[in-house]
Amino acid sequence: LKEAFRSGDIKYTKVVWMLVSDSPLMKERVATAFDGQNISLSSSSSLRIPRQVLTTTSKGTHTRPKRSPTTADVAEAMIDWYLIGESHVVVETRSVSFGQTASLRTARPIYDG
Image 1 (cartoon, helix red, strand yellow):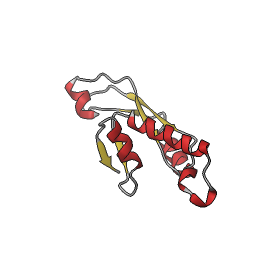
Image 2 (cartoon, rainbow, N blue to C red):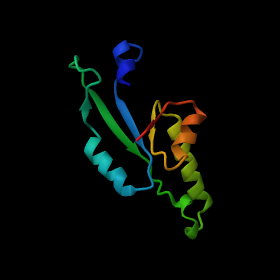
Image 3 (cartoon, rainbow, N blue to C red):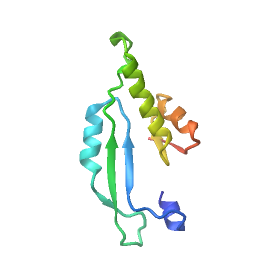
Image 4 (tube, rainbow, N blue to C red):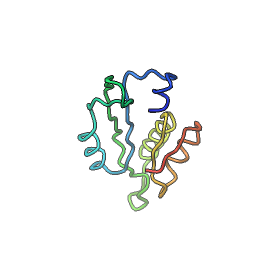
């Protein structure tokens, strides 16, 4: 994002983080720590851009076979998967392929988090 901003190719008015996780605690901690902060995409610029952190209400129940996931659980996962693919950049853990396949759907760059 910083490179595109510096080159002038993209004019950002805000930065949005879409956090998808099975952990409600992680979602809450990241949103509390980073939502609403103003950030700078250039060290030489005084321009500050607001950051918004979005999360979904999914709980990852589709991954818990003992629970017998419902159609709604799988639909919830598919919505998260689709939204990840619509992101400009995907940061994901390599321990699961969820973010990887979502980003491949739209050929988005993937970074190991």
